[in-house]
Length: 220
Ligand code: ADP
Ligand code: AMP
Image (cartoon, rainbow, N blue to C red; front, side):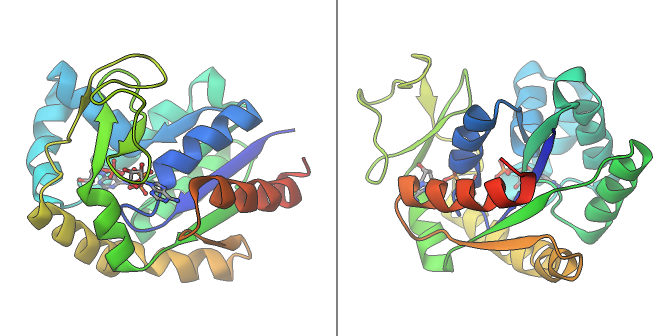
């Protein structure tokens, strides 16, 4: 049976960290719209060039571009039996497009896990985040340090600070989240899919709560 989960929460809530662990446990892919954009940036594609200015400012990339990119990723065979979506949807039109796309395939989301943290917690987490250039894993200088500074524990890749890791972009991203993404909390609550998770616990405890919620939603 499939397991289709969306992780919702403000930038810095811990979505990427949790999605990696959950995807591994369930054996389904972790699909992160931010990672897909960063692959385009690295490769210098046309989509990457278009997205760069939005990303560096902390704004959202326009819906039609984002929806097309994620829809293509979800149509690949590895997503047929489920996925963990992280960073998408981020607007109501994106959520509606996702509903349509899944309906056309005769499937539906099993749950939307809202990882709840306060803004000051998210800002402190964003301020110390380091990302692996190779596999996209994230670390934190204080809260989740790599065994060796600058080196990814998982794949040995180089750790870097993303080009949108400036205080100005962080504040902009949190504002954009409040304005454009937080309405999705009600959207999914009304759909009966929302599960709230306390994101201010340790990485392990957040994961345990998430796993328990997913077991109920997906029946495993
Ligand atoms: P998001 O994908 O929601 O933007 P990330 O997963 O990238 O968030 O996490 C943001 C930062 O916070 C990273 O540096 C990560 O190592 C750290 N982090 C994630 N979860 C926790 C947690 N439960 N406690 C402390 N730090 C965390
Ligand atoms: P993330 O890695 O999720 O923090 O995303 C990094 C940046 O990519 C965001 O600040 C946006 O500029 C862009 N982005 C990622 N996902 C989306 C989305 N679903 N809609 C629009 N822009 C997105």
